[in-house]
Length: 327
Image 1 (spheres, rainbow, N blue to C red):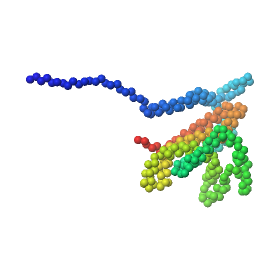
Image 2: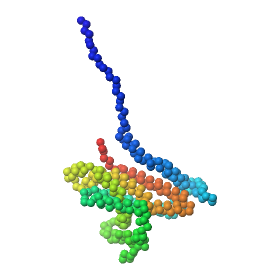
Image 3: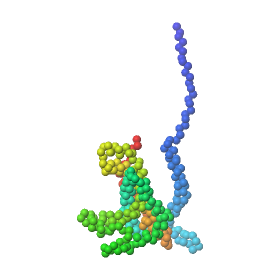
Image 4: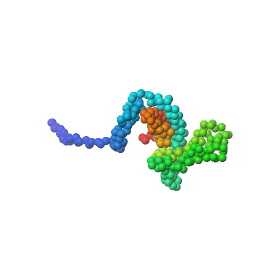
């Protein structure tokens, strides 16, 4: 018996068109980032890059003003750099003094801004007003207001080096809060070295400048502190951790990337500030006769020194930075 097996008819449909997938979120964010920095890149290439090239070129040349106008460059190699280091008696002295002052100021600014940010991150009445108060000096020392303040007669009198008679047989400036002799009396029985006493005296007497320069760092620290999940602090509280333990075990590790960012920012700000001794001296050399090429050499040596310091700070602090895993 023949049985005709019927095979079911299977309709074969044509493959549908695959939908084109758009760019991923990370790619779109990257494109948006390039779009936002595009004006800076255009300005850097068209304006700043030729100036940088000319500055490097001038540092290796000798400039001679021609009688009929214009100038002539003569290649002298490393002579300008040699003169800046070994011939100019004040450049290296000013550079070393500026480095010592920065070593004193930078840790103080970072630590003080972290302390203020932690205090202002607490739930206290009027904390928004206090945040504004600590940021006001940043506004007052910027641009035109800073120029007006630099010409303030009262400020000049208070910072006068001749000082005032304080009744101790010597003279001190009006801006000086404590003296080395006062600190020596305070720490006489505490076996503290003279270097620490000098550091503390300089720190206290420079507190006005430190407060003026910690506003931006304080805001950056506040953003980092507010990014810490409250659930972490709640878990610590349930486990019975004290505030001191929570700070060292939770707060400090979580804001360690912000500490690195603020330290690098403070280094750059300290070495490029308008009142920086080295910057002021280089500007003085630039304004002198024939100082164009010499000041260019000084500027590039100073720039390379700042880059080395930033690299050293980044390398040392990166070993202690904690990055929270997001997965």
